[in-house]
Amino acid sequence: MSIPLVDLQIQHRQIELEVKEAFERIMTSGAFVLGPDVVEFEKRFAAYCGVPHCVGVANGTDALELALRALGVGPGDEVVLPANTFIATALAVARAGASPVLVDARDGDLLIDPEAVGPAVTSRTRAIVGVDLFGQVAPFEALEQIAADRGLALVEDAAQSQGARRYGRPAGSFGDAAGTSFYPGKNLGAYGDGGAVTTSREDLAERIRRLRNYGSEIKYHHPEAGFNSRLDTLQAAVLLAKLARLDDWNAERRDAAARYHERLRDLDGLRLPTTDAANEPVWHIYQVRVSGRDEVLAKLHDAGIGAGIHYPVPIHLQGAFENLGKTAGAFPVAEAAAQEMISLPIFPGITEAQQERVASVLRAAL
Ligand SMILES: Cc1ncc(COP(=O)(O)O)c(C=O)c1O
Image (cartoon, rainbow, N blue to C red; front, side):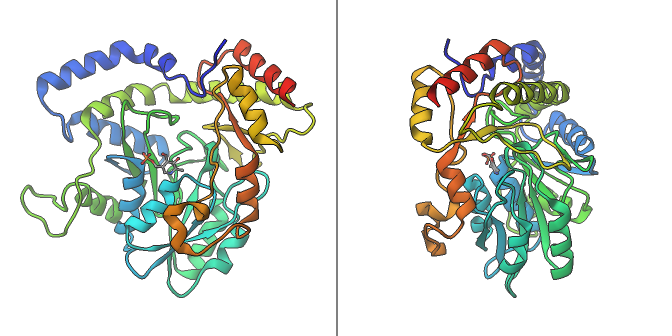
């Protein structure tokens, strides 16, 4: 029995008819760019995140970059972010023209360590980006305090947390603005690239609406230089169909995580993921930790289990960010996690039998 890391076909089968009808309608109408489905999706996703504004953009990296730009982040500025995140968080900072300043994670839930953020702030710091890693919201109340005390902007990278909550507050509602990704494998995934910024700040929403559309509000009038970064109407139709089912699908992920916990908790040498008590995670990724990871991972792969690593190389050890001048040893928690993590298959619709098999192969491998 081979088991993929993520099975997108299960979700597709549930929305197939709805999506085909929507695609027919959009193809007939010709409203491919910023059509009514985009407007409707923005309205519904803003409500889902508990904020008044959502601006659909081309992908999650752009969402973060445009949020930072709208906040005035640019050349000469520093932006603090965690070392263990997907590279896009740091790329968004660099593309806005600012310098990423990395900080380590907390050992345990692997979220950004707020204790490390204060000491990283300098006179050039302009913003902090907290990342909702693996489906858990970052400790934003602590980041909000630092941002308020030091006069900094705060951005939530909510690419991995659609539907999650912290102290009951929805992901996508933290900081000045949040950027999310609708990459197909995300909890809310499109059929291609997509992203969005959610925010309570009307000024930011307006600015991002211009920035995503060549810097224009009125056709052929461009008060500032912008980008072409819009959420496609076809993708918005897929996202509308999926958003209606997201809570159910996230509940299935929670059940699956509980089953892994149950089946794996007695395994010697295996560290299970920990959940911050304030969080209701949505298990974008279910990662365990083990020493001798590469050997264990190879055994899982040999058995046809599509386990992965998120992420094998922390940002500061990537060639792309060599210029930051940080070497091995700079962020010990992120580096240890990168050596030990294995992401197990998790997706809505994963069966008990599939999870049982993952657990038994893992047991044997240990
Ligand atoms: C934490 C995080 N930030 C940003 C991104 C970037 O999103 P995208 O791939 O849509 O540009 C992703 C996903 O790919 C992500 O996981």
